[in-house]
Amino acid sequence: MRRATQADLAAVQDFLAPRVATSMFLSGNLRDQGLTSAQTAPRAGADHRKSMTLWLSEEAGQITGVIGYAAAGYVVFEAPALTQADYPALREALFGRSLLGLNGAVDQVAHLVAALDLPCHRAAMDEVEPHYHLALSALTIPSGAGRLRPALAQDLPQLIQWRMASEVETLGARDSAENRARARVSLQELMAADRLRVLEQDGLAVAMTNFNAALPAIVQVGGVYTPPDLRGRGYARRAVALHLAEARGRGVTEAILFAANAAAARAYEAIGFARIGSYRIVNFDPGITLGETQLGELS
Image (cartoon, rainbow, N blue to C red; front, side, top):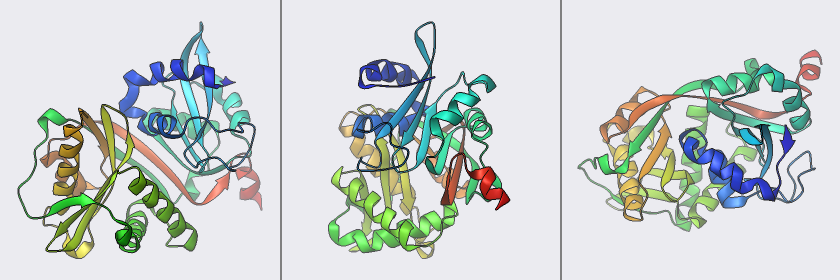
């Protein structure tokens, strides 16, 4: 396993392209922010929080796996050929880095958890969620009230509240100043990238949705939220469908997402999504330091 350089990016993108459904975070981060400027830094520094440090596994000169570390503290990867023989190199590569979470195909996450000796019993969230795909030619837009519009600066206070409520509900996060600050930064980035939408009815915001990652032909839906007192009225599915219809008009042909619960799964299936697999999501709040977890267990 070796660290990737700028010269490797074309080969990395060729490797990821046919596996895009399970590597959208990795592919999207690379497209948006590229590699970190100081790849030897063990912790996040001046780089954008989505910039990546990459390590490659290879066989006969061909890439067989990509392990990425986003400066914000997340491990994202596409490594279908990962085996126990790779564990020592993974531990060495990621030693000392801060970790807030990782996610990916279930079998690949199992390898990463074992390789990094992650204390998943301390995780705020360790769940397997259904993974869905939709060809936008098959998108169904439900009837109903509500107009979709881009999120505006004046929406930000309410959307921060919604994002925090969503993360507490679905990710097991704490409602803390640190997490609210992260939510603010994330939402501001989504607004700047024109990926955040609000469903409005009678002048009031009733739901929100965004694209966590976006490539020219495919988007990953995330951040879908309706306040509890407004649920059961179809707002979330309408917001997602209208946002996808908008993307389809720009040439996007596919979408993927994960369903946090049965109600969400039903809503997504109603607009045409079909399950293609399972995704495991592991989040730590507060974060941990890789390589120091055993020491933490003893202290």
